[in-house]
Length: 273
Image 1 (spheres, rainbow, N blue to C red):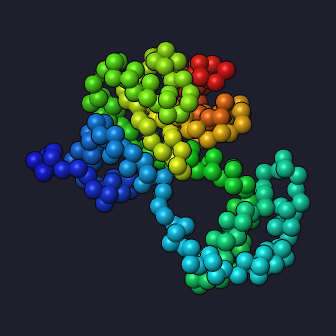
Image 2: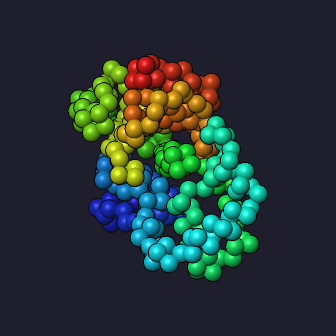
Image 3: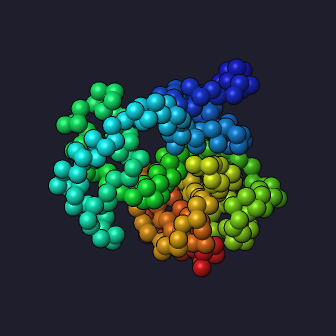
């Protein structure tokens, strides 16, 4: 590794290449070591991984000129759209949000034909709330895939520093994240991060698992209604997620659901019950 690599901070171009897996092994390892000690760099990587860029501002001129009424009439003529609009709230598929209509109209303005665009809308009929919940978990899972055992083993164990960080996270999120409450049997808490998703605080606690793999607990202050734990698979990682007391929780790791479930049950009882 060169002296330049040791002293410089990775650029956004470096981080994007890191996300895309396009860096040489030596430089990738260098960035991983930087992430273990630089909170601001980790937050920047999380922002890039989530795709949080000012797309709305870029498309604002198109949105203001979009033929929304014409598009709405076109959509109303689609059988799938009419059915979705009249389905009970318990159904999975929903009528597209106004934001989706505006985005589609903007796409029409820049040359995407309705015959190519409209068939795809049927697969996007979810409420804004459902889409947003899905997006933050996807962003976290994409980010966690970047962690390796080497990323964590290079971080020194410092219980005093971890406790101080947890106190800060508790104050920012409004949820008690004490050392006792966040302790998971068999796992070592290696670092904590205060990130941000869509303008709301997001806490990330990363543990080193018994087999060297990272386990991440994330808490988002989003005001969601209570919801029991559920399972899913994202980016090759198993996920267990739930909502309680105005916060959404997510435990994610590269381990089987059978291995992850007791860990999630433990955290659920400590933080949510």
